[in-house]
Image (tube, rainbow, N blue to C red; front, side, top):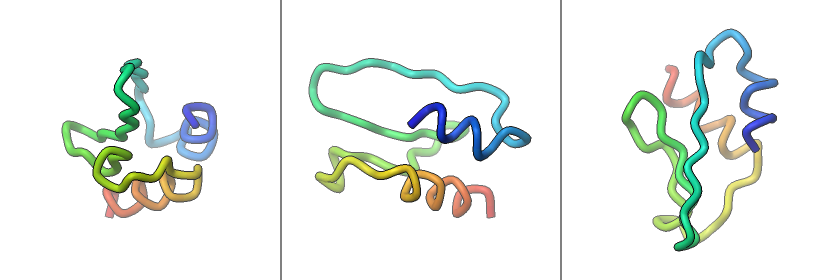
Length: 59
C-alpha cells in the first residue's frame, strides 16, 4: 500500500509514516485528518480506495 501511494503521488507526498498496531487497525491520516479507517468501515481498503480518499482530501 505504501509503495502504491508513493508511486502514484510522487509530487504530492513529502513523507509517509507507517505505524504498526496489533489491534487490526489500518488508518490513513493526511495532515492530521483521518481519511480512511478500517476500524470504522470493517474493511481493509484496496489501493484504489486509498487513492480515491487521497484525491478527495486534496480537492
